Image 1 (cartoon, one colour):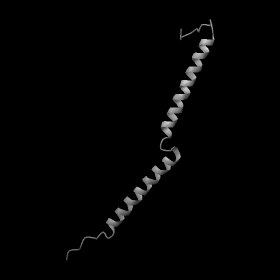
Image 2: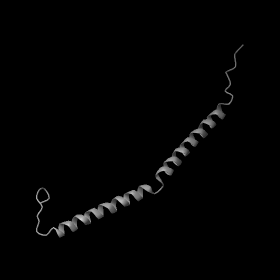
Image 3: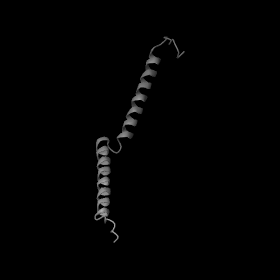
Image 4: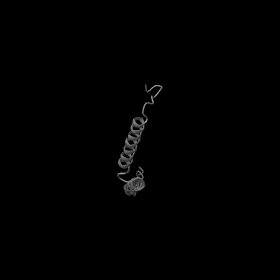
Length: 77
């Protein structure tokens, strides 16, 4: 007599459950990162950095203009 191969009861259900759990984990991770950083925070940070750099450059130019006859020495010369 030949033996029947073992049946995998619930194998498909287990696979679907695992996929659903994985999707929930990914969705929770995306939500957590978005809640922490915000959807536009990177663009806002870049804009703030650019504004700070522009203000710094403007301050340096103003300082150079008001310096009068002072000359800079070193590599910038």
